[in-house]
Structure formats: structure tokens, C-alpha cells
Amino acid sequence: MKRSHFSVVVTLALAIAVAITFASSIRPASASASSNGGVLHSIHSMRVKNACRKCGGSSNLSYHGGTGGVGVETGADKVYLVYWGSQWNNNDPSGEAAIQQKFFNGVGGSSWNNSVTQYCEGVSSGTISCGSSGTHATNPAGVLSGVWYDNASAAPSNPSQTSLASEAINAAAHFGNTTASSNTTVQYVINTATGNNASGFGTQYCAWHSSTSSNYGNVAYTNMPYITDAGTSCGANFVNSGSAGLTDGITIVGGHEFAETESDIYPSSGWLDSTGSENGDKCAWINSGQGASANITLSTGTFPVQSLWSNAFNSNAGGCVISYP
Image (tube, rainbow, N blue to C red; front, side):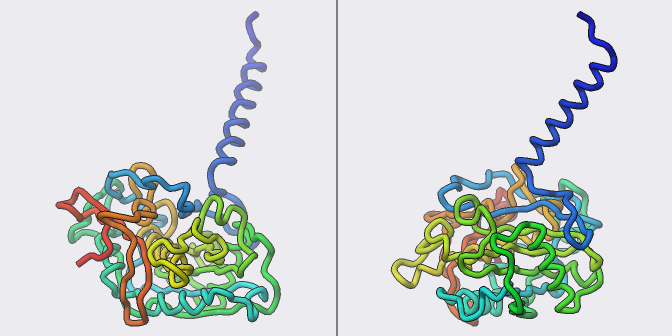
């Protein structure tokens, strides 16, 4: 029987609605309104160890055009650490805050982080090697620019992406970064207290980074759960054995998100490979051979980290490196 034009239109509309609903269920909320009227952008997560088998392919990273021309962190990069909620009060059984602060006090300027400087913005989409073109990501010393214990009241239990984004915007205001330009070289690490992590932590992901629009421009932030709550799924004893290795994941995961934000500040418009993997994803949870996770020594101590992808490694064939000249 011949269908009417009306029935064809209705059928097509229903099909489109189903397709949109399905897509929304498998992708991060990239167009959801946050509580201050901003827009949440894509999430880029570090998968748990057991879910990661060769997380990234062998293809090099390429530039994806940036957001408003901003694709990497350039200039005086800044990291702000936020310990969100009264749940942190006298409640840090693994000493994560101290380890994290020592790491970020020393990681700027390190040879481990130097690989991000080969990536740039201000070049054509699809660029694989910047050379001397564009404005390159930077690796300055002293990236830790502030610490805030926002603990006057409790943070939400199992916070949502919307509430994490709102806390990042609160942090921007707290630290005085209230212009769009001031937030193009900044990342806010939103730390949740033990037992108070967002859904999916430890079973699907270890941490993720994203961004949100706001009255202060686009704000880049990381959802950083209390990593040792996840045990070996998020890095315990991945590099070091015994009690010394129980906190390995704090800097393995924290370093992963830090370097990815530097090279893809507003996901996913910076540097990614053909599968959508960033410079940290491609080298996650390697335990032997080239690119294996290892301890690095900084001025503030010795810390386990994973390797990072370098397009320039192996005569521009690319690969995972612990240090970059």
C-alpha cells in the first residue's frame, strides 16, 4: 500500500528522534546547559586499567582546529587544585592532596612534560607536524598557581558533570580568572573526597577532563576522583610494589589528565588521533617495553607517571615517550 506523505514525514521524524536519543546515550553531554547557563563540552576520560588494551592506535595526533582558535595551552600555564566539599575535612587517608601538590609544584619544566611543546594552535586542521608554525604549547616551571579547600559545605554525593563544571566556574571566580583570555592557559582540577566520587569511577574511568562555557569564557577542568579508592583499577602498584606503590595512580592519572589538557584544552578540538585518542590515552597502562610507565625525579620528589605520545618520536613515526628533549 502506498504510504501518504504525512506518514513518511512522521516515520522519518521518529527515526531521527530515536537516533538522537541513542547518540546522546553513548556520548558525553556536549550541549547540556550547566547551572549558570553555560554549555558543557565533551568529556575525555582515562579508562580503567582492565578496560584498556592498546588504548590508542599507531596513528599520529593531528590538529582539530581549536575552539575559537584555542587548541593548546600556551604561555604561562596554570594549574589550580580544588578540594571540593567538607568531606575533605580531616579526611585524606592516602595523603592524596600532599602528593598531588608536590607533583604539580615540580612537573612544570620537566623533560617528561616537554613532549607537549611539539603541538600548537594557529595552524590548519589536519596538521601533524607544527615545525616552526603556529603558537606552540608550553612547558613552564611553576604551573601550580593556587590551592583552594572549598569546604564550607558538603559537595554533592556522586557529583554530576553539571555540578563539577559549576565548581570549576566557582574556582575561576575564586582565583580571579574572570575574563575569557585568562582561562585560555588555565586548568582547574576538581578533587572529590574519598567515597564521594562521580558515578563510573573505578569501573569505567579513572578521571576525565572537559570544559564548559561561562561568563568567564571557556573553562577547562578535570574531574579528579579520590584515586586510591579504585585500587589497582586506577594504578595502585602499577609502577612500585608494596605499600610505596599504593598511591602510584595519583600522579599516573593526574599527569595523564594534565598533559591531555595542555594539548587539547577544550576537548575535542586540539590534538587527537584518528580514533579520538589524546596524547595520554595512546600511552595509558603500558607496563613494559617502549613507553612503559616509570618513576621520574622532579625537584619536589620522585613520582610514577605514564608516558605521553610524541609525533616526533622514531623519525616522525610516533610513539610513547617518558622524556622529550
